[in-house]
Image (tube, rainbow, N blue to C red; front, top):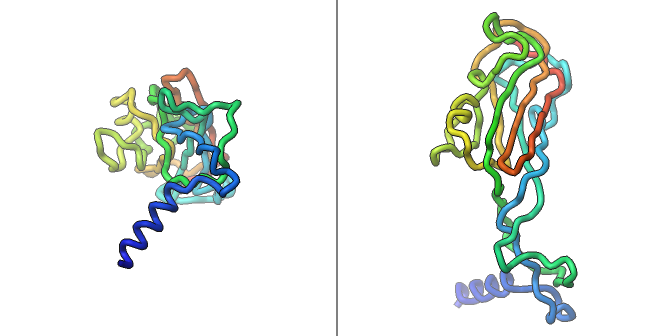
Length: 195
């Protein structure tokens, strides 16, 4: 009996749509994806202070993409319509609706004798949480480049997989292009890398 009560309560909670005075209003449609128009970059979750010495293996560049909601055909949001405001929806991460067509990272300083300022650092950075070939394992940015185009992830991270040959201050530049024509050039604050 307790299970039945919980199931009924949960069903009512999920299907609830506003208060009694909003009973005639329907809930707005739910977005199925986003069309990316903005990507934010943070170093170590925004906690890194520019030009503070940090070990290469402690650097974490995190990316978060946002954009306009995309709805399924026939279930679009009608801007002229009034919807119920207290609708209950289950929390989900809405995926991106875009394919990644370009991904590159380089630095303002020499990383090594071979990787001078402006050289691609795609082999020394790994991408975390970027689903390529149904795998969530860390892969190099170079490996992602080989697989392009791939579905863009809304949340992902870069980490260094190789120590720099030279200790020094780097501004990392990341180029991202999407199939919707959007291009992003992101940059970190100065990161003072130790070996």
